[in-house]
Image 1 (cartoon, rainbow, N blue to C red):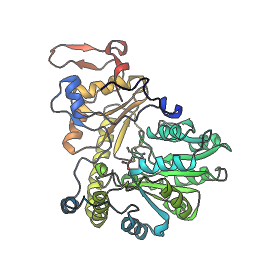
Image 2 (image 1 turned 90 degrees about the horizontal axis):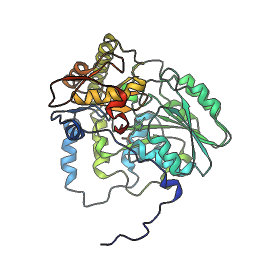
Image 3 (image 1 turned 90 degrees about the vertical axis):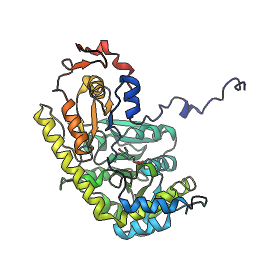
Image 4 (image 1 turned 135 degrees about the vertical axis):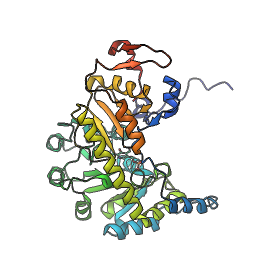
Length: 391
Ligand SMILES: Cc1ncc(COP(=O)(O)O)c(C=O)c1O
């Protein structure tokens, strides 16, 4: 078939967009480095499958996927509302927290509007901003923590969304509820403060309160949560927002029909039923996070406080080299070039493997052993084709 000529051209706001790049897989490590038994600690997933009762519900539900699901996931909204102490009209559901972020940008950001966020923060944020024709306003973090005062200073009359990932991805740090309250006071009329609590269940710092109470009371605050992380349901794409009922109504206008499938709805409900088991798994992940952080500090790394299910190695210019070093040892983490490497908490065995592969800090001194080649070579950033590595 001859392709149409000239090829169809996307709208300008789409043409220049970077594509979202998911974490590398164990298969990537095999293809690039010949490592056959690599482990993936790159996407902040839970290392265990869903709890057995959820798997059972999924089995049963599989026989009914000839039917469309409930577009608005009303049973799930009602259940979440009663657990969170809000009205069902204050809960929106979407295809993961990213689905809701996309809906927020589509619904609230017009060309020329601004969206304020931290840097680095969740990589999907600027994509949705630009897709809506908005301007991405990136505010540098301070000591790996969102600088909410600087974010407040970056708010302008054109600001429509302020995005606070709490804890932040990729740095893992959390900000206080007071800092969020203060930031909310800078919002221009008609703007929304979005507190992305995708990793809320892993937070142990009592100073890092949830913004849920704020979202209940304040019409301009939205809280995002997800079943992808603590509940181990990333493949099913179920996220939700708690917001003022007028915001929920608006989000539903741009909800792609049937975004949350029937399997996702039923699994989410069953996972809420198994709350104790889910909390037990989260507690194990948090214990492992503490163990990893302590061992990493023992190895000489100065890392920021980890409040999610990952740790952040601030390797700076050595990030790509460190990511490659770990991958050659069979540990696929997530590299943010020029900034650091994010390592997801895995099972105890997986975490041991990471800790065994972790070199001391110092970007020019890590020995790189090429697979199949017995001798050690000292890598230099220029000689290792660092620029070619995907995050
Ligand atoms: C801060 C943050 N928000 C949202 C998400 C996406 O969550 P979901 O799987 O619900 O789309 C992630 C996933 O990595 C994240 O890090």
